[in-house]
Length: 105
Image 1 (cartoon, rainbow, N blue to C red):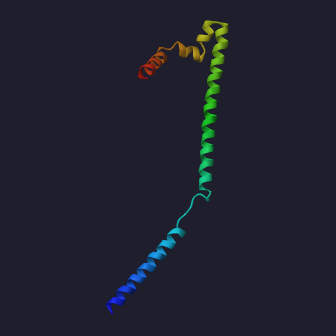
Image 2: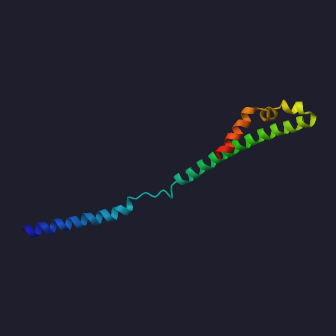
Image 3: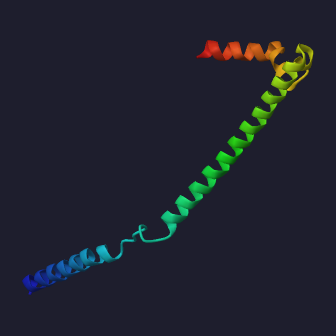
């Protein structure tokens, strides 16, 4: 009687393990076919575009400041010194920061 109980329990255990094996493949979730990957790419592209616009905006602002300085420089050195770039060029704190950056590198 004990032999049959042991063999029955081992058979049921093997059935359960086979069922677990077959279910392990069907229970897996694949994100490749979902929209999550596409949404992540879209989010990254939008964020990159925001950074690009911000950077180009700053670049345009500095270019305008440089053009203002160049135009004032053509008029007179005093006019150039009164522009934002001219004030930065004559500021000892700015030169100190530049020197610190050079030393740190």
